[in-house]
Amino acid sequence: MSKSKKTRIQHVLAVEAKKQLSPHMIRLVLGGPGFEAIEFKSVGESPATDQYIKLLFLPQSAAEAAQLPEGLDLSRPYDMDALREQLRTEQMPATRTYTIRHVDHENSQIWVDFVVHGEEGRAGVWAKNAQIGEQISFFGPGSGYAPRGEAEWHLLAGDEAALPAIASALESMAEDARGVAVVEVRDAAERQPLDVPAGMDLVWLHREADFSPETTMLAEYLEELAIPEGDVQVFVHGERAQMKRIRRMLVDQKGLERKAMSLSAYWANGRIEDQFQAEKRTPVGRIED
Image (cartoon, rainbow, N blue to C red; front, top):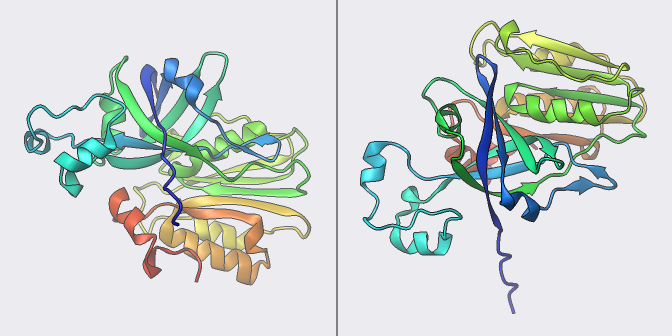
């Protein structure tokens, strides 16, 4: 007898506040009664610092919306089974994965930071135009990483997409934690004030341009970085091609153990998330050789 597929719980929260963090990053504070049903993740005894949720978006353009059947129930949480009976695959709600920047249990809120590039993308455009009171639904959270207090040295690294998780990890560390956090952003205007332990170095890399294989600096910087021997914990996330290069370098050149790393791709240059997720099941989408 085959095992039944576990039903995923769809949570619904509303936009309660909005803040422009930098020219290309917006924070939405989401809250409401649905907060109490969210099962936040831990790694061992520590709260996870890269908790990710999968936001659900229906087609947003007027042309796309016009193709939807009349009388379609679009109230949240979406009835996914009912929608599958009425919609083509490409019309179904699209998922976009984002890290929870902060969980505010006292106010029953979560913070989610969005990288916004004009009118490109689905989630970023939604965040840019989101109104107070507007609802959003999502699956999750999931997670698998939290800084270990016993680790002798930490390496945190990534681009803008990884900045929320890196910031959350730094905030959770003890003041005597040692290591380095490396964050690549477009320029100095994209920096954010971070709570960094005294023993951690924070390095900002400025591309001075939009991301491209030619302008990115992260992999080259890490190749030159001296990593001490001992118990080293690694969290590196970002663009897929760069993550492949960095994984090979850390394992083959630096001698780190793959199983001790949290290293994966958050996105892929030239791919929307639907393509990116589909390619994870193919050789081109795998970080491992």
